[in-house]
Length: 353
Image 1 (cartoon, rainbow, N blue to C red):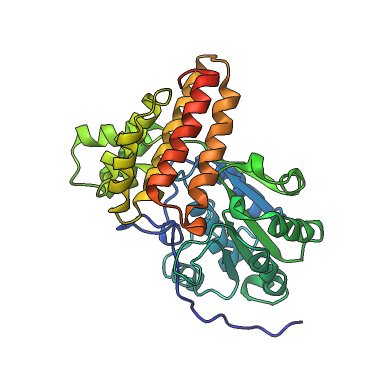
Image 2: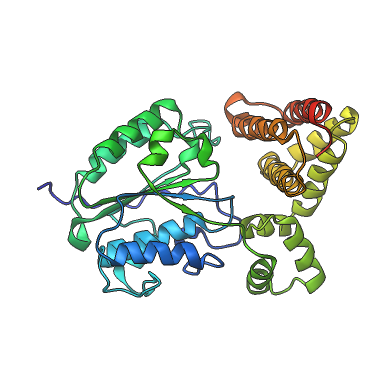
């Protein structure tokens, strides 16, 4: 048996934190996902949980919050029914304290960090994924169980995905792997087939409004309603919209989609200059643009519209474009012009969205 090795607390890099609000590892409430939580709890408390879960759904609906909830329970009680039926763990439980402070030796979280220049990395590399092999070889508390969260699996490059697949083909004992994915269709089919899937749905307007009342007590009902309508069922998106330049960037994203067929490139260049002056402005604008396009595609699908495959392809190109801007050192103006051209091409072929 391998000797227990205590993990020293590391600097926590949280590119996914919404400034001013708790990170998912610190969040104990899972709003609006009772069905997924019930499935998870039943499997874990039965004593025979799957060794790999694929937690899917749009950004900001609670995937990471659920993953950390599972991790806390597994590290506190293992796959038993000794804990609460909803997988909650008391805040003063040592495992909960350590997970919250990112210092539990039985938990590993793989995610994109910063490169040597201090810019966000664009992929989750094979070297990061290979760390799991050594991690799962160690022992820990809760009967030796160890838990790893990959947030998100969408960020893996091809080599990383193949390394993860090899581990799934020969799963270690007393180990649980939680893969978080916004776009599971882009993962290898062999990875998807080896995981128990948990699908989280967009939150209802009632749930979003209730959460915003608690998180943004100073926001009036009218503004909460606007945030809810533009959130796409994502509390994370609603909180981003509420902060700083969020509302204006969201409006600009809608405007870019409204004029997709006849883009105003002079206005787009000016928007790029404005985005460049906002801290994290390009990332936020990309999030808003992708969310707005996703919402419109869903609405068109409900209406039975044709040609949506071209818009889905366009959405994928936008996701890749904004995801690699840091690595390629692309200017915001260049990124927005390229986005506008992709939207223009989709609009000409498939009609407005």
